[in-house]
Amino acid sequence: AKEPVRVLVTGAAGQIGYALVPMIARGVMLGADQPVILHMLDIPPAAEALNGVKMELVDAAFPLLKGVVATTDVVEACTGVNIAVMVGGFPRKEGMERKDVMSKNVSIYKSQATALEQHAAPNCKVLVVANPANTNALILKEFAPSIPAKNITCLTRLDHNRALGQISEKLNVQVSDVKNVIIWGNHSSTQYPDVNHATVKTPSGEKPVRELVKDDAWLNGEFITTVQQRGAAIIKARKLSSALSAASAACDHIRDWVLGTPEGTWVSMGVYSDGSYNAPAGVIYSFPVTCRNGEWTIVQGLAIDEFSRKKLDLTGAELTEEKELAYSCLS
Ligand code: NAI
Image 1 (cartoon, rainbow, N blue to C red):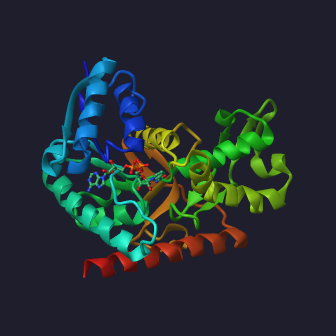
Image 2: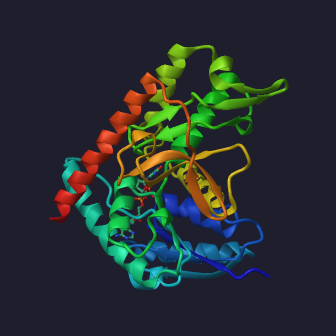
């Protein structure tokens, strides 16, 4: 039998946490033959609710779940973890300036970086979900210098999956037959959902999405804004932000990272930029990646047209600006 993998979920008493922990305990993230021990962290005001989640995990009698640590102590939460899914953060409240929210999150991610660096298992893989996801991940990377930069990522897979969903609805095809969309840049409304290399499996072979949709105005307009603003549309409809889709995307992200992407398929991940595609280096930028043996590699050599270039630059500039804002909060 396999040794259990320890998975940390921060903010586990929140909405996404509540959707995510049962998925992990059922094997959705790491496979149906992989036992897990869940580490759940939240802050003291949420301690009772967190304990309630732990009680429900016990009550669900998940065969793969070999233990649950539910705590408000960040060191206890981080100790020995192999995978860390960082969902906890400070939400933007009405009337708050962007800088105030950034400042709160920078201090959270700085202290959690230290705890992970000192107490997580060697080669721990980190996924930051909490917003501003790219910049929180960057702060975590900067303050955990002994964790390799390649082990620190942020979630843009929800945006990627939303793009697949929109194409599948438009063409009335199975979402599993659509692949290789790309989310470039920031997990924010400047992200660029790119279908220029996306394909659909059809009875007569793989076809480019552009050839099948035949509606460039939609692809260059409404498709992009729908994906960029989907989060806001969910809040409007549910009066709560996306949770089940975010949790599901977090499982997809970790599963593909650990177990590998299928041959010929890439996914989008926010990773530490090396300047590929002339994105700014030294920020966490979403790229198309393939994964093998537990490591991601940026897909190289894709053609970027002029329309796309502008959008890659715009979202890159926003990330550079966010990085500066984050640093101004530190000093
Ligand atoms: P929520 O407010 O329901 O849950 C957040 C939880 O984090 C709360 O239980 C809170 O007590 C906890 N928390 C706050 N500070 C903490 C700290 N220092 N350490 C540990 N836990 C802490 O929020 P929800 O809906 O679960 O969303 C969580 C985050 O995910 C938000 O920042 C949201 O903007 C972000 N998000 C990101 C998405 C993405 O695609 N990257 C998609 C959807 C949401």
